Image (tube, rainbow over all chains, first blue to last red):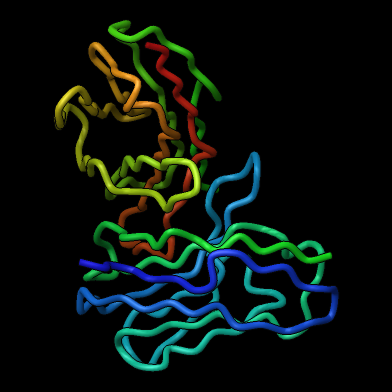
Length: 112
Length: 112
């Protein structure tokens, strides 16, 4: 019973490098989300996909892009990483647009 | 602007010492208030949803309550395994998960 799976778990990048965080869910959920969590701050929404084929900006989208590859998969791309993007990233999914969230175990990203 | 404030930031209890965690909110109209538990190095895990003032929900040693301005998470006779960070989030009426506002969390430590 995997739920929401994120890869990688840890990543270190140099400023200016690019990378893609992968997320997949096996619960047949319609909606998927990317959050970041920083010390002393609440979870903040980066991008979301209310349903397959749609994506939208959240609270802090600058510096990121997303792709809803199919119903199961939602990826987050950093085109040119900056130290301000050092954070823990969580992918989440929900059956509906307003129902409880199921989170992955996170990706700890450091940008040097 | 929707706001969520959790207090205290950290709480240390002795095993068996009951206490309450507070989540105060200011929103234009509340659709639902969510409680999540987050263990170190893991993603948040759903605990409860409350929709209207006066509503209560229980799970093992936890009971969540809701008023028009705040929610409490009561922990009765806690055990060391209850140690975690507890997050609350509010969803506004007419909004969706894309409009969830999370608090910063309360870190609970229960000593044996």
